[in-house]
Length: 300
Image 1 (tube, rainbow, N blue to C red):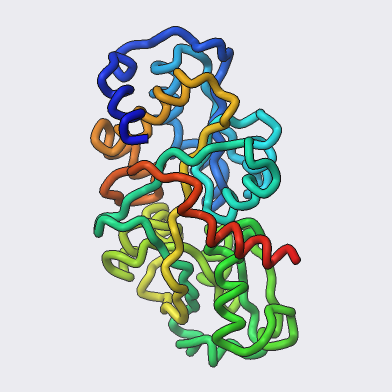
Image 2: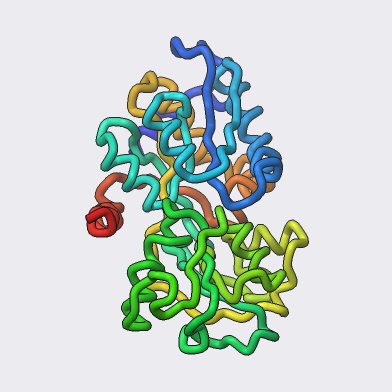
């Protein structure tokens, strides 16, 4: 893949429109996490760059849930997306030939891991999972890695109880996405929830990147009113994927565009990558085999 990127960068593909590579349009899918309009706004710069690069109409789709992006990739109605590791696992298990991972976000510390973070309102007096017995715990989307898959495995290990409502937590409920979870906790609609963060930087800023950082940037929360109550083990950042059926020339150009985005347009990259990032690096299927096994176990 490094050679692939180098070959693409050596061309004039990034500086001028090119032939359409036998595609009539290009479709980019965006996972949940923010409201649909904010997601569309964050990706508008990438949409225009893609349209200029490929010379075809480019559209951004922001389905209501994670499964909408997965089904779009499987059905051929979405060509590229930044998936969570669990979403990639689901897509691969549904059809191993549907997509291929090309790049992964690199954090400011040079790693590509992130965390599922449990949090509550500071004034609720909840400082750990021990204080969550019989209370309402919120999760984002059942196909989210940090918003459900990993905490649904690791939290029972910590509490010794299942995730069934009434077993340990009074109620386990899905909010619909990361932003919804954050707002629900902040407004006191649920007692605690989980979301994703790179774990770098300051809590008051919502860390350097992730859903909390985006919520702070959007003015939705004051992190001083929230407290962290749990953190997962490191999770591999999800991959940017392309549909395997795309023409090879299109794959090369889009891989090069995404790899170059942080250096080419840091403001655009900030929006697309949900906060600060060192850059993007090549990634392959092997990096997600552990997550694929975890999804298999959850489906049994």
